[in-house]
Image: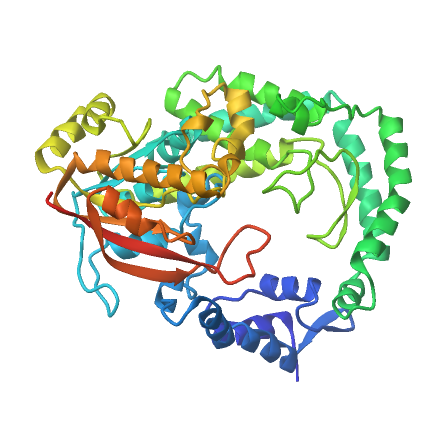
Length: 526
């Protein structure tokens, strides 16, 4: 039986118990996950191909993961049924951030529902929640949705900017007007060069080349092993380079990059891209309203992250600057570097305003703020007093009800480096050496000891500001079994733990079985 794209999406939606769009089906066809035949220009999908694909991704995955990770894996906390549009709803996708948890996980432990796994409620409206490893501010946002106050702390000045920008209030009319003003000026700035003409001509030549050499049939032959993808891709990459170099020479495109990795902007951005970034940044600095200016800075940061001179596959973990066309293993065709930020700036400006507007419609009249500081030593009430005296007064009276946070993992991410472009452009002070468990310190015995000391010091410091009988929830992949030691050193005990599968990872090994544990701690003699 053959199904149209629409019929296939309807069947898959019912079978998988989630919304599957025709675009989702087209994606599966494009990457040879399901079969497709073309009849008079219409794509038709064999129903048996759909059944085979979705059957392999339903209960079989749960069984396979439990075999690898243990039968104590709580699949209820996988949130498998939640669509991506919900895990990235409103301001949660304002800016990329490695290692953040999905909002549904925070909401599950903060809200007032109970179920077979969560037998008690721990927080109520108007309580104050603390996140001492605030990251991109997910806990702040979800606390607001639930009518709770929240205080975040982060050693990274840029992380604090992201979190605070998400929950801030804006004059969206003014923000839209300022972003449009910058867009118009950027268009005029770009039009004075030959970049857009060159880019359009290059895209045209690439489209024709890719259509000839990287069809759906090619992807299917790669999947069946008839074609060695790496060798074939390198061969076609070399064949197109001649055309690319001719266009670069014809339009006199400057590809010179700095070999000095000490300057992130000069090392990872083409000269034409840097010129546009500096132009937009100079306009943002002229905006009078501080809140609007911070919002525009976040939009620019999101834009320039997407415009680094690297391959699509290496955008999350940079390897080396790319200044030529290349075979892209992610898209299965020849791709090109970016030569202008205009398209991304336009897209992200519109998207960001829409996301802030969507959040504005559900925001509660509560206060959330991320403090820039070291959670091991910061005087929380004193710092909050400077940000919001009314919340400080409330906090000192009723105390902080509890913690929901995800400490950094040992030797996994350098949190300053992941946003190095923003530190370079905006001039934020870096405090790399104060990070707990950064990648550059590794995962060895000394690094683990330092990590235990750091996280336990954070908890001990935070205890001074917590209410009696408080609840502390820490999300971690404890591969070294160090959280029992952390709890003991912090004067706390682990009263419960929930191991959940992490299904939607952003790194290259996202297909592998992976879990994290939510540790529920209680303070002893507090």
